[in-house]
Length: 455
Image (cartoon, rainbow, N blue to C red; front, top):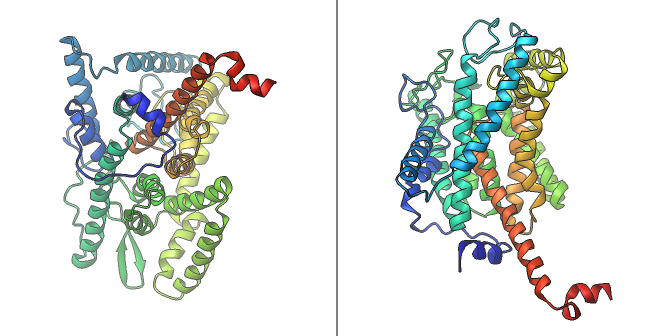
């Protein structure tokens, strides 16, 4: 039985993850290592080339290896056709944006630009190229995942690899928090990444709990909000798969004290109640949260809660700064001409504190629409007839909400990882539908269920 047939016949069965060691195609070794390390953002292979995280390097090495193999007459793992089509449309899109910048020069003085050039430079900014490399690598990662899923129906294996990476990511986060609490100094010895603005990723962020300073958990992410954003979809997936590590992930997410974490958890329980009628869990969770809130406000933990509330209510400085950056970005888009509003001013030009304004300014309404279609279309087309698929739907929605509201990065591999899993499920449904239709077409008209229905 081939992989396609196995996918169709097993699509309605819930996934039971087997954590025993199984062999996968050795040719995809670099891809497998990229999956394990995809959450790591603060460690780079070389500080000379800023942003060269390990997973990015592994994917680029995989495409280099496969390109060489294809030139030698073995295109077994080739994704060059898909990659070529993507590059063609993406480069054409950016060419349109650059041409539009000649006719109408956007004012970048009030917004947060990514690269350090003067805001008066509107053509071919450095960030257009650097940010495009990140995007292209994510797309290549997605294409490789789709190829592996289609060829081996390898959902269990890929999720198992991701699980290993999640555990290492979370454990290092607890090590970081506990080490800081005991030694009262930063014990993160792996983070070495520095951004273009010379911001060190191992920066310490604490919350005061009376006389105790609690380190906001970030592990090997760039900051606490990125840490929570990275783990939220896996929290949902493993919760629905009844994998006990979801409790460990939940504790880590809460200890990030990030508004992104609380927004994502609320969105999860709310969408679960709306889509699957699990109102009881929402009510119980809200009830426990209220009781816990009232109790904790009487303890030193109340300062932690007050910190989170101050960010949501814009009483905290970081909340006010985020709002100002967002308003300036939206104002730039609103004051642009119609074509710039549709196509954007250039990919990677500016970075707001949210994905919505970042996409609108950089790639316009068309870019925002393309991103939403890519992430949401398979979620609402596939049949959510298993707990695994329900988890994919909820995880995808939470990723969209948090990325549009509080995270401006689209180069996290886990986003593309879940997108690949969702598109694979939708492709299984399509094959099943086509197989059923073909079978019905071969049945004589007199015996066909269609004839019975019509009669």
